[in-house]
Length: 135
Image (cartoon, rainbow, N blue to C red; front, top):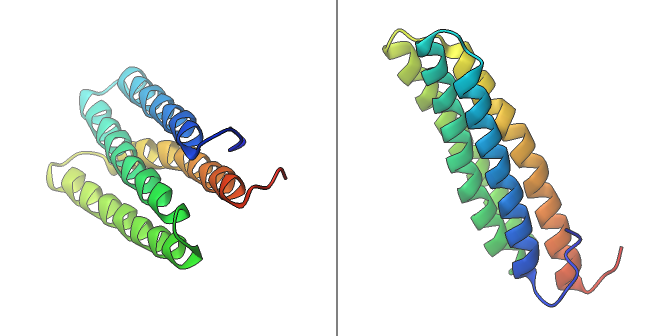
């Protein structure tokens, strides 16, 4: 996961696999731990929205690192807005159905924080690979 090797594809694939693993673990935790069915549903929605926005984020960052710093900053801004919208829509969805918002928030942000680290790691590794650096 250092970005070394012949192509950035290996770096992307390894980070995408980590992100998929985080989503699976998040879904398992959300499906197993809440005792109340509505809380499970709420948590699973949170995990699902975080995972979906994580896919978009990783793809946008992959595209951005092939360009320049400006493209990377635009990708960060767009992804932040997308995630903020996902949280807002998810919370409104939970509240409109009379469901607890806390499991949604825990599900979303539990997965989001792990995905954020993976995305940062990917950008750093891909940038080093593009620059030809070993550090």
